[in-house]
Length: 351
Image 1 (cartoon, one colour):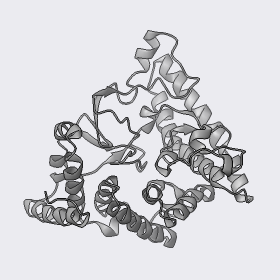
Image 2 (image 1 turned 45 degrees about the vertical axis):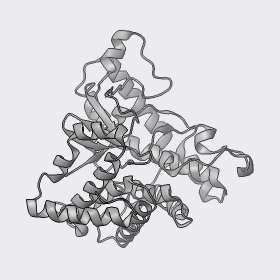
Image 3 (image 1 turned 60 degrees about the vertical axis):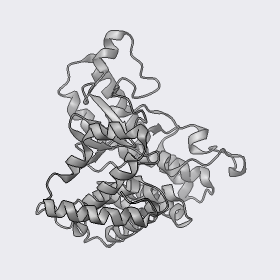
Image 4 (image 1 turned 180 degrees about the horizontal axis):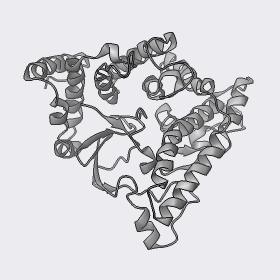
């Protein structure tokens, strides 16, 4: 019942993934180049988006949420770059940079800030320095989160891009890869793991103030502010990681109770981390519970499926059968009983 995570297109119709749109200034010159770029990594595969779930070629991929699900970059096997349509961070998304917060636009949602899709308007380290030197207000906090999220996401993309570049012979693809690597280098230089921890710090402050999106985004950011940080092991032997795990699970439960349905799917993922010898003390491995994992997945499936506009696409995804793979009939039955309790705890009608 493993899932990976990628950015979301909210359409319920089959869509083609277009790799030709990395950046605003990266445009194809003609139709031939455009077709060559289309489907890079994803090979123009058809996908269905269901309540934040990206379903493609037999794989269930969670997307960044707009009510039902959200993003997490947890595996270098994913290539979220395949879905990027990066645009400069604007005042509407980052706050009015350089202006007093009293005159700033409506605060951006944490779920938008952590998706990593907005290209910063200046090198991210500059915003980090301003924040550390005491610059106050929501605007600088939003800039720091959005910038660090961009860099955390594109760091994985860069590694995948470099590997892909050695395999591709298409000029258009090579140019796009070069552009992405160059931009990532320019915007994300001089950042330390300690800088990335600011994501957890700021999101944690917002969550403690009752921001539900921030509660879920705190999980999205990962231990030590990003998945795969190198300073200190990302294992439960690290007290900071253990503390983050406890807080992240607690806030996911609070968010789910307050109507963030996508948090149920993340909780399913939390309890689906089976301990393996190769990764002793891996994050969430001490919580492994296939019955509980299935229960949360089943509850999410039921609640999303009540929306008739999403029901057919959800059925086509065969999500529930995939969630049941690898568990016994007894575990499935126990999970469905637990799922009903979860749904009832949310004040929902019994399935």
